[in-house]
Amino acid sequence: MARIGVISDTHGLLRPEAVRALRGVDLIVHAGDVGAPEVLRELRRIAKVVAIRGNNDREAWAKPLRDTRTITVAGARMHVIHDVKELRAVPRGVRVVIAGHSHMPRVESRDGVLFLNPGSAGPRRFTLPVSVATLIVRDGRPRARIVTLTV
Image (cartoon, rainbow, N blue to C red; front, side, top):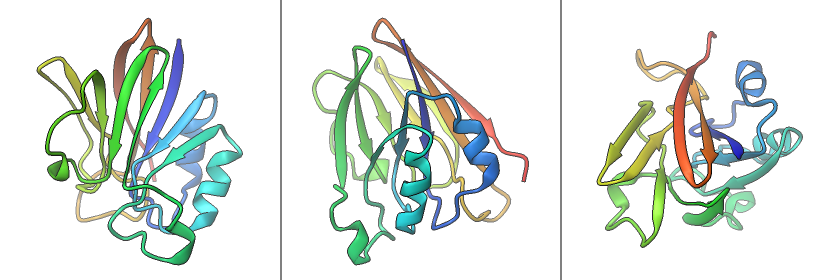
C-alpha cells in the first residue's frame, strides 16, 4: 500500500496547511506550476517528490522538470500532466491521470481510469477552494480524496 500526497499550482506559495495535510505520505506528486524551487525543497522534507513543469514554470530552475511523467506506485501506473486538455490519449496501462492547471479540484473515473486534479494549494483564485489530494493505492487499486485546506 502507498499513500501519495498530490499538490498543484502552488505558484511559489507552500502554505503551512498544505504541509500539514501532506505529512505522513510516502510520495508527493506536484502537478506543475510550482512557482519556485523552495517549494520543492520544502516538499522533499516531507517525502520523495515527483514534479512536472507547469505552464508558468519557465525560469532556469524549472528546466530539469519534465512536461509529463509516468510512474508506477504500489502496482498502479500513473501519468502526470499539468493541463489534462493537452492529453491526447491515456498512455497504455495507466490507471490514474493526475493534472492541475484549472485550480478546480476533481476526482472522476472514466473508462476505468481515475482522473485526479488536486486543485490549487497556492494563492486563492476567484472563489475556488484551496486544496490538495491524497491518493491511496492498495494492490494496484487507486482511491483518491480531495482535502480542502482551511486558510
